[in-house]
Image (cartoon, rainbow over all chains, first blue to last red; front, side, top):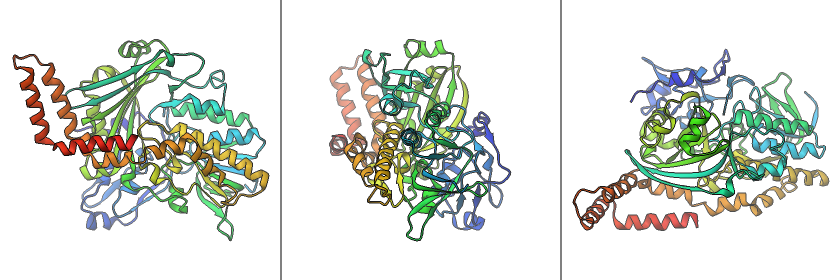
Amino acid sequence: MSVKVEDKLFLNRYRVDEESHLHIADPRVCTVQCSDQPCLYLCPANVYRLEKDRISVAYEGCLECGSCRIGCPHFNIEWRFPQGGFGIRHKFG
Amino acid sequence: MDEQFDVAVVGAGPAGISAACILAEKGVRTVVLERGEYPGAKNLFGGVLYGHDLAQIVPDYRDRNCPIERNIVESRIWYLSRNGGYSLSYRDRVFELQGKFNAFTTGRARFDRWFAEQAKDRGALILCSTVVTDLLRDSNRRVIGVRTDRPDGDLRARVVLLADGINSPLAKKTGFRPEPKPAEVALSVKEVIGLPEEVIEERFGVESGSGVTVEILGDVTWGMNGVAFLYTNKRSLSVGIGANLLHFSQNRVRPYEVLEAFKQHPMVAPFIKGGKPQEYTAHWLAEGGFDTIPQLCGDGFLITGDSAMLFNALHREGTNLAMASGRMAAETVLEAMDRGDFTRRGLEGYGRRLQESYVLRDMKKYRRFPHLLQEHKEIFTTLPELSSLAAREMLTVNGVPKKEKQRAIWNAVRRKMSPFRLLGLLWDAWRSVR
């Protein structure tokens, strides 16, 4: 089953920061050392996407759960909270 | 911000606000630092809050316009296979509106904002849009304040209360508690689905203002260790599934695909039919239980709520444990202020309070429960189908004698599971909850 997560993220309210709060520390680790690439699956917002030769980071839709930080087998994701007041803003919660 | 506070609270959630209410009421100079634009902006739970611990902080919460969606009068448990499943429900007149709420549904964006207002009324300062990025320490490693992402953002306090939730980069950075391992958290995704008030009442068979909770186990988590839920709000339903984070990555399964399939399950679909999705969110649950609770205090700091991994997975209790721990932390701080001792020894009363209360007694009682789910995958894999087969066979009238049906069921069970395994499950299940 293919589910478009974009339709879900579109429901949410965000205040998007200009700068990403998520960084891949060493992109080579993803392509050379990481065969499983669990970030492509476990992220509930599909922030991490496989491009031709790298993994892109669509931080704008991040739900700030932290799963990628602890789920990356190489601890290759530098994760901080968005700057105060930025990121997702729950309407209902 | 070189102002001196008595207490700096990290995070305006149920734990932090509970503490701030009690402290501010006693005249303690309290500041709460919240990274969201408003309290609740970042906070999330399944949807059920309990009245008891809230009343300990704000006894007249109902008169103070606490945002309540529905009072819970009935709890259901479903055990589902792919095409159907069992339902067990309990309703009681005792839970009907009679002055006090046992449990009610709410949304955290509104509830936490309201709760923070109560702390503000009592004199606490709530600083929003402020991320705490580090703890300040003196030369003896004693915590003496917090560093924030505001310009000039160091803030000193006599004691720091960590109430920043389970996803805490601050914990990782400062080491006040170890970063959870993927096996120790469940990742839960939730969708709020809007429906007219009367439709909800008709579908769940409740009066206006009353509601139902449904906790769901079985095939719905695709063999992963997890749960799903369906809760009634006033004009929406909270629909969610959660599973062990390690299982998501091992099984290469996307959380929103499991959620979407769950919404189409024949037991679920009729309840949400025609509904309009309004919000999609994600959060961790502290699944590790008693054995993952960190050292609860140190020199100059205390840890509360989800930050301290206080969560009772079996009874889906978390916010109440957060409120209770926040209250006990505040009581301990008051004691420490009288003595002027904010060292670990001076704050030890906090651990003692928690141990004597239902918070740690319950968590201790169920300390084996996380292992039960880890060691008995069949609860999520083979058992849902087998149990459904048994009911389906016995309920289908097709000319086959019942004795033969029983034999067929028993043979199917034995093909999938040894009788020893089944006995082992029952024994372990009993031990994990006794």
